Image (cartoon, rainbow, N blue to C red; front, side, top):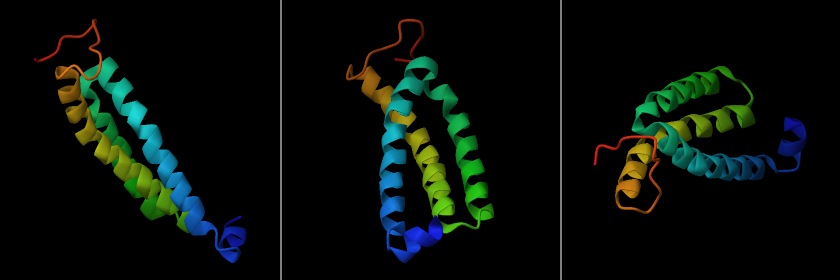
Length: 104
């Protein structure tokens, strides 16, 4: 498949669309993760990011290595977004989970 994508100059397009989808999927993940677990789950995304970096280095296929890199750094970015989501909840832009206590 990689040969087909490379031969038809589609590899960059597939990586670009996949990157767009990976980033897009992480937006609702941030919202749901913060709603259910707060910022305390940041270490899960750190672990996912580290695993993704290691896998990206280990995989030889350019397309999969690139997508694993995008996944890993999207996981790292999610850590920052969790803390920003907490601020958005504090401002009332997103609903609070009534089953959790908040530091504000």
